[in-house]
Length: 232
Image 1 (tube, one colour):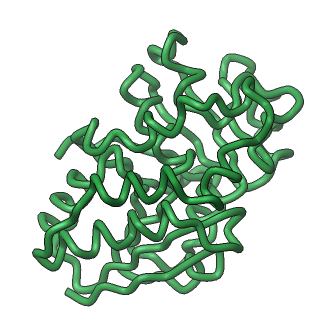
Image 2 (cartoon, helix red, strand yellow):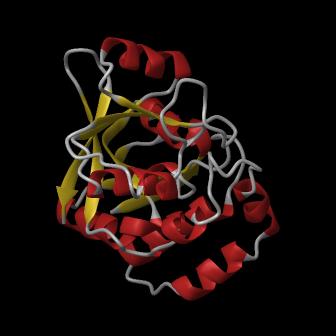
């Protein structure tokens, strides 16, 4: 198995084989929580206008997302696990757009298969890849806005790579370093608790809370993606 580690939107465009697109804070941690809350499906999109068009055509859909960490006008919720924990999402379809994570999904144009990456289901990701036995794995750390390195995404990338190679991971040290990382703290502090509650750090760093992966499947009728839950 060849394992390639890549970064940012450009890395997503270069990714081949089974591709893991990582966004720890918060997109793909949140996506796992959405499915755990009973969501019927999640549609990741790249553009705000596209997300709003989905809502216009399907008023019952729920809009979730952000730009620069802040919930956008007309959206139901921000990009936050803490915000949706008490929301009834059973059977709901979510349209999700963010500055980094969803951009990686729509730009991974050469990937054979795309799954999301986060700490909340990291070991399930590893087990899924081992089961699939692909010749090539591309792990893409999306970073801040898909353009700038983010310590949490890089750490998750290394965690998954080490596990695939049979190496151990010291998650306690990873979490401690991220909690005291000045750049990470600055990113999480968006000065808008309605968009990004402080509790999101703990929710996004709850290692292996979920035992499923989320696969991005392209819909034939319109070319859009939809996340599908696969229990591992």
